Image (cartoon, rainbow, N blue to C red):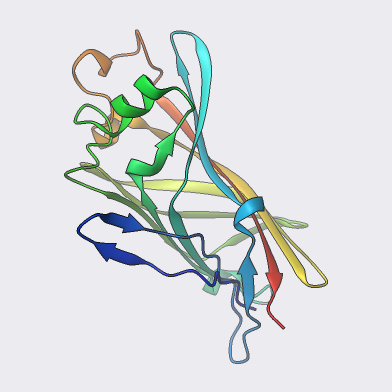
Length: 195
């Protein structure tokens, strides 16, 4: 089956408009699905000055090809516009997209690509792929659930990265005094079958 959003990727001088897309596909006759953006999120969690901070990315796309009969043939690609990161606190959000963190003006996208899902039992899976984020290219493992019920599909999962391995958090942010090194990447996506 294939899960796909109806939105498109547009590149222009004013910036990028990225909408959510999720594709889960089998061999020949793929069923199409449309992501519900109101019920789909891509977020992150970290610790700042000892307190948990959570945020999300407003603009991203994801494509997943998956056949329950052959999870090893699955493919996943996620593209994130890092300038769309928000935690709800203006000064923090401006700092995150600046040169010490995502440096979104120089490198506007983060890209994750993986091939092959490993079944963990029940509706649980794991995949290890490559994350290209700012100045780093490193492996990242995601664990997630995938449930299809009638005309609706739902996937939820997470992975953890070390931000300094990608050059995220430079200068005063380079150590662990203010911000922790580990950042959790969290996703929760719902899609419906296209008639």
